[in-house]
Amino acid sequence: MQRVALVTDSSADIPVSMQHETGVIVAPARFGFDDEMFSDGTLTSSAFYARMASEGAAPRPFGASEAAFAEAFRRALEAAESALCLVTPFDVSPTFTTASAAVVAMDDPPIRVLNPGVASAGLCSLMTALSPYARAGQPMEVLLAAIDLLEPYCDTLFVPASTRWLAEAGRLPLIEDRIGEIAGQTPIVRAGTRITGVSLEETHSAAIERAVQIAGLRAGDGTQIIVTITHADARETATHVADLLQRRWNVVRTIITELSATLGSQLGPGAVGIGVSPARPVRGD
Image (cartoon, rainbow, N blue to C red):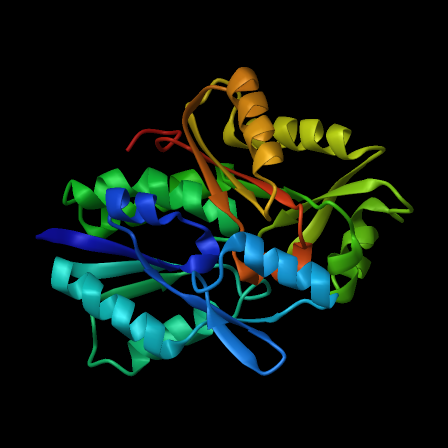
């Protein structure tokens, strides 16, 4: 039996194949169109973004429920002595609250819930980097030390196809406060403790190239890195971004996945995200 099982929710965009490989247990987040409630995975990515485009309205993201986390923790404690749950920062998703509530409702369980300050694709890359430690039977203190060393070098950057959905989600004021009035240009935004502006580029292609540069520099020039590219029904662009990253940086693993509703509802169809993490802690184990 493992000492620690890793848990997160579906806003980390970990594909099902990676969940099986890494052993990460994922609680499904929820979203609603009008009065219809869905869980991540019940609509295909194409159907989800097509519905956003056709209805002209974004769904409301609700995060993973307390019950979903309770079930994820039950599975985790069947597989391991304890559980370590990493969740998307609160300003981006409410799952820290529901995960913590699920722990409180249990009888003093050996579970830690952490907000590592990185969301979506970056959280996927971080969880992928941590999974060998968990599967090798390392104790909780080793995983916590690894997070402390990895997290400062993790990042999640998005290039949206348009700013329409960010505006409807009320995100543009904070973004423009950092990078200036967008006025037809393409922003690069960071999904960390909140969604903020990073850079402003003349064209979408220039923003993609700049995001590749910024993400790689954050992870460390020359460092072996894990990259996750998440996309909102834009696989061709995601494949292009993966190629740029592999040519520019020391990429040892590439994950291409689909952007779930939590951030997809705010970034909209066509958005592409880059998540990076060093493959191993930068200053030893």
